[in-house]
Image 1 (tube, rainbow, N blue to C red):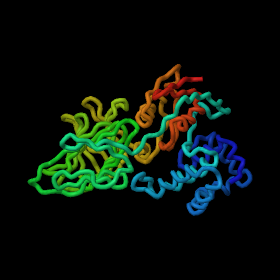
Image 2: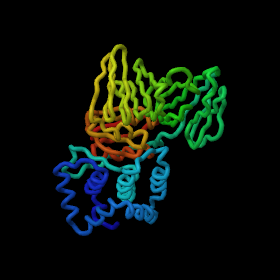
Image 3: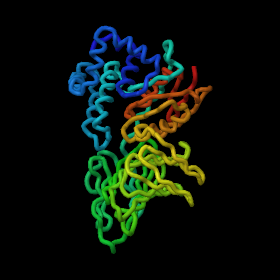
Image 4: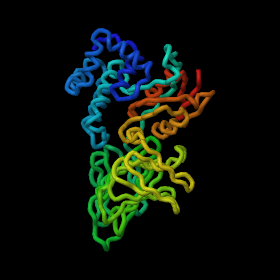
Length: 396
């Protein structure tokens, strides 16, 4: 892969962007098409769109010093249940990763700013007095008797038993097994994540829940009665096992989301605006007070005060990026995306100067240190420094 474009970050970004099916501007298309017409570039580009050829390139990648990055990438491909990268698209991200591996940064899938489309951006002077690792699969489980169990991906085996229900940790997932009898007492547990943590949960009805950072879910160890009800704070993604006779209800800050069997994401972070329910599959009813609405796949119900607004044509990949191991920004103000950084890296962001309104777009792997993630700010002409658990951003 000794091609001249590897020395040109701008062209590299455009190729990655096209592979990942991102929309290019007319100016970007012109630049990329000119590059494709030069030498063997079009052949290389075609190879990156071929799954078999791509797999060979991934296996050859050990010839450069990227073993750790390659292992991370292959782990994500080999464990689709945990990361949930869809079969039809994983290879496109892998193709982008091949390019990224060659220039030495598995975190930098794509990042550009419309203001920087012409000219060469200046490199910021970053001050890293200490670095911060990314978040990880950790959580705290509080049992009905008030006792707590600290969970991480290495924890395994049987954790506890409540009534006839066993609580297990299987391959980094919290699992509840056993439906129990109707006369059995119903116990409630709470799964809580701090900043810098997330965790998957399999409920007793085989429904699956992924809990994002700084979030919680209260749930019964088994579902008795005419409904299945849980309460959440923060953000969670649900894949609900179908049961027409027992609807599943998610309660969050006075909002009720009612489903039979479906896939959806709920974001109720207070610093992310209204409570947002994004539907992936099936149908859900969103209710607040006397107001209610039913949304379809690709729609998002936004609840603020006593109003419910429905947004159509939602980019569901973007809404689920956190669950799939990515940051995904699309023409968003810097200030609006930083809460995600704060939650995942357990850091407090401070601003110096007028940098909060910078527009930002990109996809970045979440499993990198903070300093690596911040390299993308070179395109925004933003200096940064890390002091303890504070990240200070300043315009150049």
